[in-house]
Length: 214
Figure 1 (tube, one colour):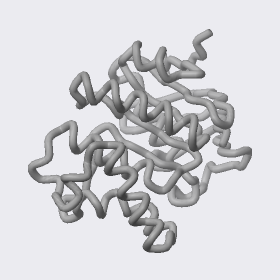
Figure 2 (cartoon, rainbow, N blue to C red):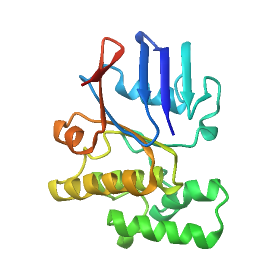
Figure 3 (cartoon, rainbow, N blue to C red):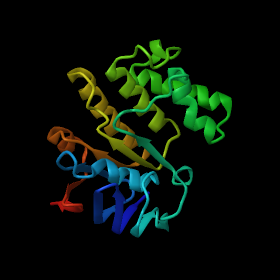
Figure 4 (cartoon, one colour):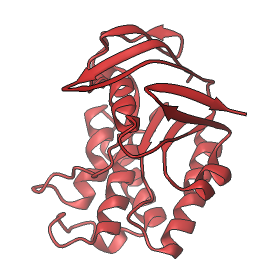
């Protein structure tokens, strides 16, 4: 589904973002780059409904979402630090969104197994986050974001904690997810290679504004 921001602003403490404009068509893979502290994470939080929209207009799939609850936006969100729940197993993380959305048990089990195989998590399904490596935690968080088959996927540095081989494999996996499931993606990265490999639309955040790269 499409994503449009028109003159959107938000303020967090002394940090101010915007006015920001962005037009990401349905089915596109958008890549957002920018210097550290430029507000890339804040922009994703604004879209996800986790940061307040103080001015402007946010539309998802052509519908105004200025005041929509995060749960009503059909978004999968992978925050930069993963934010896993200490009391839940890997399997429970992967099942979280499908369960929340009322999927039948058999379909939930099938989705968990599919994601675990793709992300190299099958042997870790009964483990809890404590003791997992940084790369393993990142893969669990990515699987959780994908599990409910969202229409819009927000990824904040999703491949940053991975070794070279897993980075390459998950780059290809994200490309396949985008192609096979038709999901619209907005992916924050500092990695120019990721941007070139994955992005159909490239943006840069500078001075609180989103610039479209030609």
